[in-house]
Image (cartoon, rainbow, N blue to C red; front, side, top):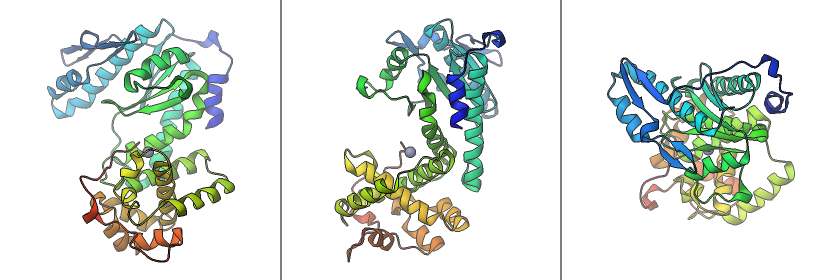
Length: 341
Ligand SMILES: [Zn+2]
């Protein structure tokens, strides 16, 4: 996959093969109705962003059977609007499961589409019955340079630190999408696989640690990304020093994933480890994940389908002598956090 992405942005531009791809009009049209996306767009750093509230209102006016088409019409209009604002090289490319906005030659943009389609297919194949219905398209915006990438991203991340500008990211917006910055495209391959995994499981009421644990494991399986043995050792020591029967509750109810510092890094790693162990009995794991409930951190389902006591599993990993390490929902103040990152 990496070679595919390197080819995408690393290849010589074969302009002789280049054909004009489309720059859709910024107006969505369906069944004689239209919505001018540009008319209500918000300008930020000279780039237009759709007013998604208006978009969803327009879509709601259609029968349920037409809403997916209406949404797609809006997405094309959105990307067409953005392409016009970004410059004459930008065009919109489309496949069965993806929409890509790119300024690159056709063959490279098509490789990007093929990559997103292929990643989605591989994720679905890996998840088997855990994958939900196949609807909608993935949207990926490939910015030609860091300047336009930063201007766009700053709409969603106002505190974007220039020195930390990434090669790409997944934006949890009203309409979630991927953004990537030019030649560093291949670096976000794990992000694409990770986020596609969440998207395919969005119909499940998974505890966050299970959801993130599956996404990190999928990422490792499909991209070959993984920690070195020395890093694993160092992390193990950090886990043992960090977790207590009290603060582990933030792991089970998902809040640790949003905390600063070690908590979130260790939560991702602990979720990865637990899911990795539980997945060894894959058929039982699928039955567990289908019914695991965020409200009890998945404890009941783990006992029923995997014969695992979550508290004991963690206590064993942390080499703690005693203590109640499992989910204790009665101590959780407020709702559980199931919002994936
Ligand atoms: Zn995630």
